[in-house]
Amino acid sequence: MSGMSARSSLRARLLAGSLVWILGTLTVTGCVLGDLFRRHVEERFEAELRIHLDQLTASVELASDAGLALRTDLSDPRLRKPLSGLYWQVDREGGDAARGVLRSRSLWDATLAVPADGPRDGEVHVHRIDGPDRERLVMMERIVRPEEAVGQPLRLIVAADERGMTSPVREFVGLLVIALGVLAAGLIAAVLLQVSVGLAPLKRLREQLAEVRDGRSRRLDGVFPNEVRPLVEELNAVLQHDAEVVERARTQAGNLAHAIKTPLAVLGNAALREEGPLARLVGEQVATAQRQVDYHLARARAAAATQVPGLRSALRPAVEGLVRVMRRVHAERNLHFAIEAIPDDAAFRGEEQDLQEMLGNLIDNACKWARREVGVNVAVREGEVAIVIDDDGPGLPADAREAMFARGARADEEMPGSGLGLGIVRDLAQLYGGRIELGQAPAGGLRAALFLPAA
Image (cartoon, rainbow, N blue to C red; front, top):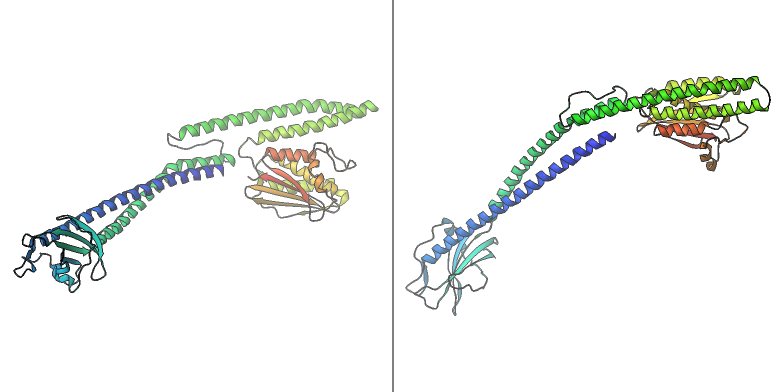
């Protein structure tokens, strides 16, 4: 799971970084292109208005009756179509100011209301105003003084619908969004493909590590890229080194067991053939030494076994075999063993001898205290095996349960046993990354729940 989560995290970081880069780059590109196009349209729009304003300036003149007229009509046909969105207008300035003394046919019977900002002669001002059809107009104005009308300044005005400037920008931005969206989708697809192809060797590496962990393989094999090959070689070297270390430790533990047990057995047998206080003392001390040797050798064997990948011990045959043994050991008590259906795939990731050591101690302890029934239930959940053993005996108070794990602790001194069982069980479980919990069984006795890593 840790390898999978690490790979997923790497994939997520690569994808997130690529997506941020793609979206950021395309967003900035879209904003820059949109702004450049908007400026271009505005400049062309204002340039067109200036052309109309220049034509109006060149065409307006003072008529013979002191009125105003145009020498020639302006060229754009929209100026002759009512409410077309393009307009011009001439206002008189000065003492007899008048608005709209001359205007385009497109204004029909309306006039343009312009701000009274008073530009200097020849200066061009641009404003936003409301048009005759309630549309928004971009207006450009200029103050001129015809030679024929000294002291009679004229305000020349041309205006056009703002939509002529904003509509092309909106259309361009819409097309730009679609184009950049398609480009973003293509880039994201390319990034996904690149990340998938780039991380494929790590996926194969994870799968082979899982095979090593489950015991289907002893090393990593296959063709890997040059960037991953050194990692594979180092992992194979570590696996080989660990296997050698574990094998030496197991051999040394076995040699130590034989070296110590043989003299202890000789001393024990010699003490049994003799009588007297010294013989009893030697027998008791030999038995104590034998228990201590068994305890520490079990710990040493389990510590070495936890370093070996691929260990697997099926639970169903182990539980059924121990129950058959306990039926014979406690045959005089006529106990009933209630065993729930054990899943066929339930297996402990460790050595079978250690599994039998732990289960044997727990089931034997339950049999010693049970009145009539001992229950065994096995379940597999979230990568671990839960083994629950209940009895209908007197149980233990909550404040006394933790003390039972101390080496040599016993709930009743009259009950046979060494007091090492629960301590061994907890130590072995912890060596494998598991745990044991004591609680109250439904029948009132003691419940021992053993949690071990599942294979």
